[in-house]
Structure formats: C-alpha cells, structure tokens
Length: 265
Image (cartoon, rainbow, N blue to C red; front, side, top):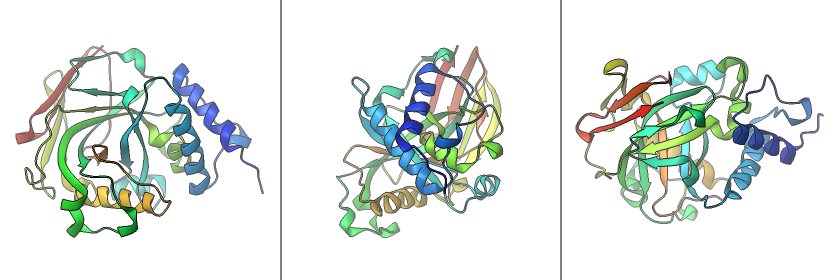
C-alpha cells in the first residue's frame, strides 16, 4: 500500500495557493487515492489557512451538487470545503485578477446558521430548517483549479484535497428571510459586460439548496464537526461555472433578491 504524507501534501498545496502557482500533478507520495485521504489533507490545509494572520473560519462550501457534475467526476455525492475570512468580501466593487490563476465563478445561495448546531441531534431533515438557519444571502464562489488539466483529469480526490477548489467567496450585504424565495424554483442569471452568458436555477442544486445545506451538516456531524452561529453554507452553483476574464463587469442577477456586481480587472 502506498504511503501518503498528509501533512506534506497539505503544505505543498498551501504553498501553491500562496504563490498562485499551477502544477501538472502532485508528487506520487502526496497524491490522495481515496476520499478519506483527500479530506485528511483538506483538514491539514485548513489548519495552515487558519495560521494566517487575522484569518478565521466563516463556514463551508458544497461542490458538485448536480448529477451531471457528479457523473463527470465519477462520484455519487457532493463534496465540501472551507470558507475563510481572509478570502472573502461583502458586495465588492472591484476584484483584482492578480489574486487568481485560472478562476471560474459560480452564483450560489448561501444559508446562515442560526445557532451553534448541536450535532447530537443529527441526522437533520427538512423539518429542522427553522432550527438550523435564520437567513440566506446571494453569493458568488470563485474556484481556481491548480492543475494544468481538465476537471475530469484532475478528479474528485484532488479537488477535495485542494479545499474543494474554493479560492474566494463573495456575498451580498443584505441577509434575507428564509421564506423570501421558492428554493425549488428560483432563477439566477450571470452576465459579463451586460451580456447574459449563463442561466441557472436553484433546482440545479440537489433539487433545492436546502438539501445541500442538510447534506453538509449531516456529513460533517458524522466526523464530530459542527457549524457555529453566524457561519454560512454556500450551497453549490445554480449555473455552470464560467471562466473569469480580465476587464469584465460581472453581474449576477438573483431576481427579487437583487444583484452582485463588480469589475474584474
């Protein structure tokens, strides 16, 4: 059986992130070969992120929430990563392309945790929504794949190890009531320079973003992990991921929830 150096793998990926460097492949002794190894690397990577000055955990992201995406990566469930305060903005007007390597943007609904979650009550179901969440926000996740290959060739294990490919998170300043939208059918559009390039819907996220939030909470509860009051779950993209290009005005239209708009230069 091949030995994986979990800590060295996390350190390697952390340095790639800080240096904004891309790689062709992980060294053989750092390459995860199971979901379990991938999440162990991710946990070590989280500790390295939290060692950065003024950086705290602000929640989790869920990825691969559509059947098509899971088929592409040959997995049968979503995966998750971590959100951090150092890589996060509220209603920015401008974001520098210098922060990223080959970024893609994903419009998402995010759920705010109501109180510290008592995981002894897990598993949770749809009837527990009022206990778990007290609001929602419009959000955009910027993912950045550190590998010089296609998503299919990268594979799920390396995506999980790299914090679910999460690079940056943006949200609206306004927090909306949970009854503000129909989670099973709410349209979202994304435009570049005033031209719509993508149409999406909340039903693309496990049929309903609430299902994504529940999946995440129950999944991490199995490992003894919880979420705290005020943290967020970014539930998964409502459109396909769109590559970011320089000198572009980005507008994500969340319908009656409003817009997130910024310049990417």
